Amino acid sequence: MLKVAIIGLGAIGQRLIKNFTEHPEMEIVAVCDPLEELLNDTVQALGGIQGFADYKELLEKAEIDLVYVAVPPKFHFQIVSDCIAKQKHVLCEKPLANSLEEAESLYKQAKEKGVIHAMNFPLNYSVGNATFASYIKKGYIGNLRRLELKMHFPQWPRAWQQNDWVGRREQGGFVLEVGVHWIQQIQKIFGPVQLVHRNISFPEDASLSENGILAVLELADGTPLFIDGISQIAGKEEVTFTAYGTEGTLALHNWSDLYGGKLDNDLEKLEENTPVSSLIDELAKALQNKDADLPDFYDGYQAQVVLEGLRN
Image 1: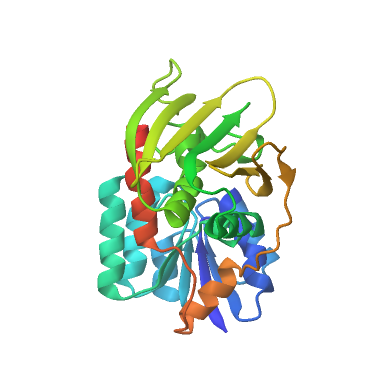
Image 2: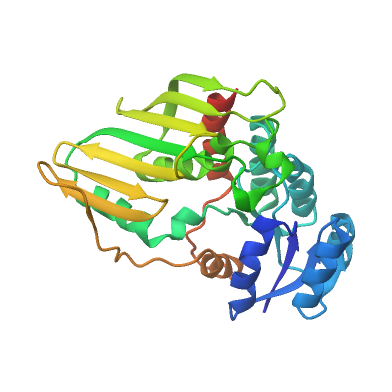
């Protein structure tokens, strides 16, 4: 069995616990969080495994193969650096770090030590997103004319994610929290992007994260990518990614519901039938020295290059 430790047991950290525990080759053997009640509840739910309030103690005492780091972004650098120094393989939440310099350093550290350095970008394992990429590759829309990413949030932070840092400018905001997923996907499917122009707005309270953004980016061939984001509005949440081509249109609604249509036709729901693996399956392969489809710290760094341009 491959032994896993989780550092950070908040809403994000809890999400993968079920995936790890249900995998036949993975075993969670230790968890860490400074909140005593949350730590104790998780330890008991997992059958009385090792629990630590201090991640450094976990790294010293627990016998582990992989550490899943699911703490807020500003803590990524030190914790991941310490994991790498202990020769532990790492799965890190997005964004990779809280600055471009930190992200680059983590990638270089992991590469130098030869440890697995994976990022949790779940859209890579979504059937809808995989089918979208397959349609693009097959030429369904013809020549690409433009890309559009729409991120509209009536409430930010979202109701299920009421953590103080998520709504703060230092390490939160929807551009970072949500945009990072799509920037990574765009770079994976369409190649590098660079910022041309952006207009970003913030509330009167300078400590709070952005409440609006309009941005223009370009692919290497000059194809435009438009980003339209806004929060604290009436209506329903909408996250949509659309590709317009000379022969048709493809769109992912609500993150992963795939719609498409040829010219002069309405968009219709398309069958999502591209087989995908799972993050945990791919981690297991990598830990057993097998070929694996895992976004790594380099992918995280490349996404962060774009995100820092959008935010700063």
